[in-house]
Image 1 (cartoon, protein in one colour):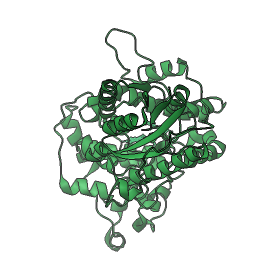
Image 2: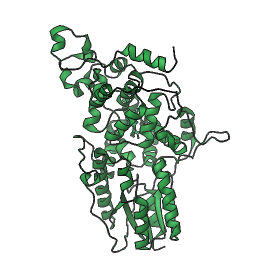
Image 3: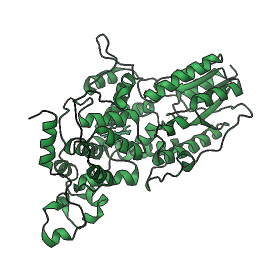
Length: 459
Ligand code: FAD
């Protein structure tokens, strides 16, 4: 074949890139294409933080392709219409694409296959690009079982399944002459009027590989012991690079599995959690918006409480620290995500979709599978085998921020409170209390717990 299109999506990299690799093998010339999909913006998914990261990732991908003699072709519009148009303009016989798992990605695949077939062209979809294992690679035994609903048995099978090998980065990419491209988009082009958080990570494959390299050298070995240490900030922070596909999960699993330490083993387990949620969403795309396992919740909604939660003014310092970090960095430690989500859905008893939407508005790694299904996990409507557990913010704070450093970092108005006293400013009285411009708790923890138990029929 003379020409093929490599349609980039959540796989913005050159290393271990099966989509580009296959396109280069099937055709003498390849169009590396990224469509700024107006459908993503229309669905409310193009937010300032991810737009900023994406702009960096596209610029980096273009630079990498130029290093191989190619370039990135940019178009804006409906992704299916634009990909079909580029294929027609260049006479491409095939369009190569990474398999997605969300309802949106699956519809895109079907529409693209139909559109291309109508013009005598083929869509070639590649697995194990976005995840380490394809969603249906391991299935529970039994009829009609199309996914695992519990992580531990999934993980056992996942570990036993073989991964594909890592592919080399291309040396040369020949793009057909004269293919029209728009300029690389800026964050403002991608999300007009949006204001990104002040401390976002740099987007792109090179930044991701640098971060992975540094973390492998100095963080991974202790990961198992330190992964819940809130002030220590000892996790990899690779999630945005994995979300946009700047790093390959297959390559990361191979590299970590080659190490003997328990930290690497724990890191691989977290990557398997990522695959786990993707295989749930692939089998149940509706779980992005509907309860995976309904508990018959009749959620409350109190505007003042939800606003206090979003702005980090609940009066619970560890919750507020997490929510403020989210606004500042577009990222949050997993332990903080869990405790702020538990506070919203269980202590305040607010619908998990309210919290999931707020996270998607801010997270630079905001991801349909990981976000929606982790929210459901915490809310107890998802795959947690102990769906009614409630994370008490005070217990969490004492355990994972015992000296109060995380709170003092993000809630500076409490910086004068030493040690763990910072977790309970409501204990102060008189002029001492008046010295701190910090709100009283929006809810009494015991009242919140009792309300949750009544709502779930646990009394
Ligand atoms: P590390 O601890 O270094 O883990 C390595 C990688 O493993 C992560 O980058 C991530 O890709 C994967 N991973 C780790 N924990 C999980 C998990 N529980 N579920 C799925 N994958 C995991 N992760 C996202 O990538 N996008 C989201 O939108 C997202 N929303 C979340 C919402 C809630 C309420 C909760 C509780 C968790 C959410 N997570 C999400 C999962 C997890 O919190 C983040 O992946 C992790 O904090 C990212 O930091 P890290 O890269 O330093 O992770």
